[in-house]
Length: 595
Ligand SMILES: Nc1ncnc2c1ncn2[C@@H]1O[C@H](COP(=O)(O)OP(=O)(O)OP(=O)(O)O)[C@@H](O)[C@H]1O
Image 1 (cartoon, rainbow, N blue to C red):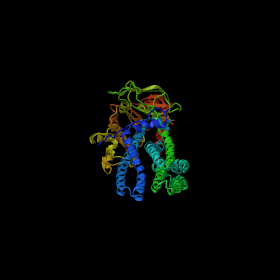
Image 2 (image 1 turned 90 degrees about the vertical axis):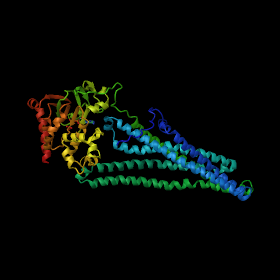
Image 3 (image 1 turned 180 degrees about the vertical axis):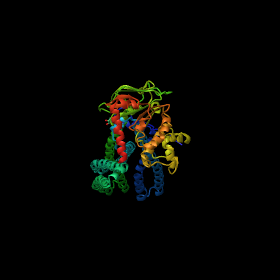
Image 4 (image 1 turned 30 degrees about the vertical axis):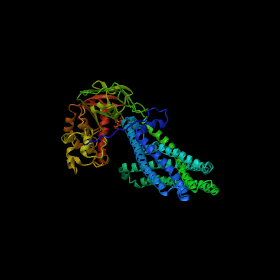
């Protein structure tokens, strides 16, 4: 049963000329009620805590020293204030962290939603693994700053109130006791400044370790087949040593700076003791006042050390936000045009007309490529390796846009129809199909999650997958290992064919989709494949003679354009290159079998 999850409550401001904080502001604003209550509760709790030293001072001076007021009065006041601080502190923390995690949820979903919407050219260009592992820490640092910086500012604001109380007790003592505070600020700022680069280093080195581990795990089959475990291990060790070095450096710096930052305020206490004590001896100040002063000084120390941290967090968040925005500002290249219409009642006439295409800024892969496929026709596309066959396949569902010319389905340019309806119309099966770590049933039903088991079994039979699925330990409920590695290449391909067939697309593209299926098994499923192709326009990219024989027509691709078009027998007769390509492909296959 599928459950729908709430979408992000806000999006970032799209104007890239604005500061990162302004652009992120809508994320905070979306939770303003909760966040505002958190900040108000925190301010209340802090305001009350500022009263406590004064209360103790009065208790000392009025009850203990001079017995003017019963001590119990102060005790009840203290109990009352503590109760308020408890409740306000609870709400402050609860709501603050909730806001922080909501912001994080929004940011993470925004990123993921955006990444999902980006087109193939982006994924060709960017190292997505690094990007996603970095995104996690970037999201965290932006979230921390957005939620905790205002919280820290409230603390700083309360420090001003505390200082007001100190001034009310004694102006000269207040000023004198504050003398070490700039030093506290400078020290903590220095501390953060020297630790900032190291914390960056830790993050990027951790990302390096993650990459090595990821490659080791995902490439485990290559690693083991070359017996390269030692080499991989030493790569990992090298990366791990670098992480350790950075952590040790971080600890060194902490050990050097933290005691100074923590103990410097004691200089202020010494001043209070010395000058305050002098004033008390002179009779100008009560003992309670000295005690209250010390408490206020401690309260003031927190914001002064925090300011340094706040600046550092701001720098980090700004760098992180810029990286996130780089992705969020990336515009999907392949999108529905404003006037896009749905492809409906598709017959399946497909035409490539004078297509010129190349990847990114690269050279043309296809040049003046024209191909017409009538509804229901099965065409095999043959060509040397690298001649652009897969590229043709990718243009049909509009994974990429052509540089010149057009690709049409039923006469509609693929750029004029909605991507959704186009991709429902054109089913594509790749040679290395990606399967998910889910049950066989869920994998086949990927394009139609509500399909019932009868339909799933029907397409599995057509794709020649039913028999081996039934032999799996739990049949259709067997969970496939990561990327489908618990199945053979041919089995994976058959599941992928079934998955596409379930959607019942009127146009089908098989890009080397049966290459890993045993020649004999392929022959066995030919009857099924023929049934599949009947009634839909099918483009088969294949090397094998047996697969090519399923087609009504064969076209030969060379130098980015079609050089021959006809039946297999005609091409064999008229075009020496065709025979050459076939011979090469089938020799390779035989060689592969021999190896
Ligand atoms: N994503 C990509 N980005 C840049 N260039 C690419 C990309 N995909 C393919 N190419 C280039 O385009 C050319 C055609 O590749 P294509 O995969 O279409 O060939 P093919 O005929 O299917 O080859 P094969 O039979 O080996 O699968 C090649 O030179 C290849 O290097």
